[in-house]
Amino acid sequence: MEYTTLGWTDEKISRIGLGTWQYSETWGLTEYEAAKKVIAKAVEVGMNFIDTAMVYGRGMSEEFLGRSLRELGVKRDEVFIATKIPGDFLNPDDVFKSVERSLKRLGVNTVDLLQLHWPPCWHNYPTASYARALERLILHGKVRYIGVSNYPIALIEELREAFSFTDIVSMQYRFNLAERWAEEELIPYAEANDFTFIPWSPLAKGALTGKYTLENIGGFKDLRSNEPVFHPSNFEKLTPLINTLKEVASKYGRTPSQVALNWLIKYSPVVVPIPGAKTPEQVVENAGAVGWELSFEDWMRLYEVAKGVRITYVTW
Ligand SMILES: NC(=O)c1ccc[n+]([C@@H]2O[C@H](COP(=O)([O-])OP(=O)(O)OC[C@H]3O[C@@H](n4cnc5c(N)ncnc54)[C@H](OP(=O)(O)O)[C@@H]3O)[C@@H](O)[C@H]2O)c1
Image (cartoon, rainbow, N blue to C red):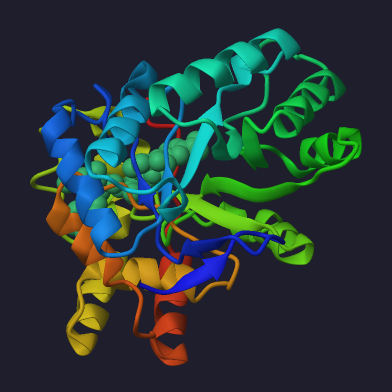
């Protein structure tokens, strides 16, 4: 495994993390022992950066993660736990209440990184009020660092302005070879401010792994039955990209997933993808996305082919 540091801190995190939304009805991995095997393998291969959220399985993901780490005997400082608080909880009272519950589910005293999952768009809680509450959590040792997810830059600026003694360390957004809107302003902002940029759905929910085709995407029983990337009108646009991933992968003796993740890592030193995995084998494969490098020519080839992909989210 390769390591980097989290944002402007000197916290050591793996260059590839583990996403754990999979432990939910939404993604379908609801059996504890199966989740534990995934986590055990991630720890074994050195993925110490683990992403979860309060809303994943309404606490199931946090519970599975905390219980697994305990049962596996993983020491607290051997993993960096990043969870998320939903936008709906970002009022001063619920910030405290929800983080207490999250800590309980995880079975830890402190969350390493608390990410604001999305802005409080339905309730419009004033930014300054929840910024103050978040800083109390740091002062009381409940949270070590704050990150944002799915926040527009203007609101990030407002939040940073409202903090009195801290700053965010990370930004988490959708970013993969097929969906590259984050390139426009989000990644440059992370680079300019020394924040870690965490791409979610780095494999486009599995679309870039090479195992899905127009013929076999009809039978999903999970969230992908309703996912724009897997809508046939979009998925067919992915074919040239998937074929190029396969060609490049065979040249390096790698897999399309490893190439797709290596491409993200080579995009910027601040990028730390968190692919979700359902099996230990997927974890091992994803961990193998580091330790080698795409040449500039192959990276550019993918850059160009991917530029031709324009996903539409208007699928109904
Ligand atoms: N902040 C946010 O709003 C937000 C939103 C979404 C996700 N996230 C986070 O980001 C993480 C990753 O995103 P994601 O889960 O949406 O998408 P993803 O990582 O792009 O795709 C995950 C899926 O791809 C398949 N897969 C993964 N590795 C594979 C491999 N090596 N070979 C073959 N198939 C493989 C698995 O499904 P199958 O085996 O069933 O194909 C897996 O469930 C989540 O777990 C979550 O922690 C955050």
